[in-house]
Length: 220
Image (cartoon, rainbow, N blue to C red):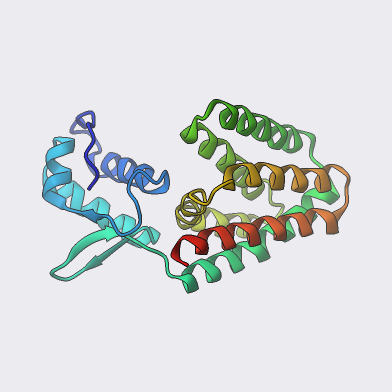
């Protein structure tokens, strides 16, 4: 596990707070795919017992972020090429439909939030603030999921959120990925603002295809 100083966690709601800390470090890329997650070491660093750490790791396993193997312990999941393709295929089906729906409805509050996330992404990229950039890019996707006119469709994307963030953080290691994501978000928003359902869906498909290529590139 990467060496870094963490604030001690207070006793209240230990499992949830350990879970959130580890999840954030995984999806931000601070803990890379394949990194070992040693219960005793994590417990010592966070100032807790091993029990909440073990419970948090089990929860992360259910989220699809951690793999736990007998006698080998836990490690950050390293998605296979098939994992990436399958998850992004599902995202493609869902988000293209959401983009079409938004292009039909064009809700002003949603459009304003999407525009604000793009502007924040540009500022973060210009200032070299990687975490702020990741957060702003994530807001764009989260707003799409939340704005779905189909609550079950939105829930599916929320359920996939952790794995999608893991894949997204992997793709960000590809040179130029951040700038490409911003341009692709602009193209999606342009289609929505124009009320052009097919353009919005095509831009969404292009964005997801680009993420897939960049996610698989580091693995060859």
